Image 1 (cartoon, each protein chain N blue to C red):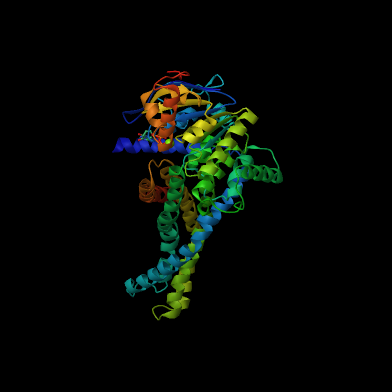
Image 2 (image 1 turned 90 degrees about the vertical axis):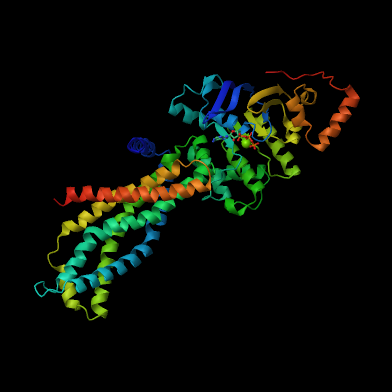
Length: 248
Length: 266
Ligand SMILES: Nc1ncnc2c1ncn2[C@@H]1O[C@H](COP(=O)(O)OP(=O)(O)OP(=O)(O)O)[C@@H](O)[C@H]1O
Ligand SMILES: [Mg+2]
């Protein structure tokens, strides 16, 4: 088990050395990168917006219900909502969700290219197929993911504001004051830095599983499941390490 | 010229290729024939280096493939055109995009020239009005022809075709065979074709290698294939009704078992 994990990790590193080479043709890679930004990044925006608004609202409601002590000032609802969103939700949890969407997409797409011999066709033409297919995906998604992270932060806070506006649980002034008080800019950077790492994990792990599919459509499905499971675990592990490094 | 010397290939302990040696000549259409599952595709993939044979060597015009560096291999591969059994077209590109792809990656042509060349290749394989369709929107036979157009777009020195006319009607098959034969002679290419279609064997079989259960059983050409003494080859050749009739005719004409032009036993 441990031995095979180390072996897989080594294989994964070898794969990355194939991916990070000088592209055969910059113009083509650049065009593909733009395409991947739109497919992997821009197309995830609706999902990010919906999930963030709902989670933001739920966190806000939970905080109001659970903080009932008269000793705690009422603006702490907004404060806590903000901290949870900035510190964990908009980076780690969002990345877990994106691992499901983007990761399975990448793994199944590349896996299908493998089983229909499209990757062999590229190799036979003398193209570095790993570089040609995977690099635009990794670069495209990593470049775009901060946008998703920041969007999620805003939408989450907006979700909390909706609760304040349309229910009587907490007043809008109180909420606004809460999300502005004791604000530390570093927390935003912390979230963004984390998402960079997570985005790299999602795309590269999924591409790795897809690229080495052997067999047919059954294996493609399996690869896509493995990609999501592995990248989720890696994201959680990286979260612990990064939090220790960045917040201490 | 491509030479294979004593190529053997195993998959998880099962031996699929047994010590195959063969020579594929320049300017000729070289056919690899054999039953389904005999190992034609595996042999072809060993030739182009998609699979690594456990034993044996492949030489491209005297250059040993095994000893080449990655850069040399990539260089060699720009001189190779390959048609896969399942076409292997790029799903995200149109027909025109697929044929233009090698030109875009490797030629120094302008966009317009690329388009012109791609159009020429597409016309050459007899496709019309399909330029802007995606591979999923055209029939299997059309996909095959697009794949051929893509394989020849860069004027390769070595052309490999894995069953170029499976899934095509007889008329189109002959057209494709003729096309492959024409370009081979015209551009002095080394063409290797996998097939189990007897029409192709008789039409363009200038150099034929018969593979039976992973063994190279017989080497010859379209003239002496009917007169071989290999039982497996005879079974293969005379499997269809039509060729059984031919056999009876030949036997009447020449007498049973009398073979003048015996093929070489490898
Ligand atoms: N990747 C692989 N793993 C294990 N066995 C394989 C693999 N590829 C091929 N084989 C085996 O090798 C043998 C030869 O297969 P191959 O695809 O070369 O047949 P073929 O002559 O091309 O047949 P067809 O005319 O149907 O295409 C088969 O028995 C097949 O089971
Ligand atoms: Mg085959």
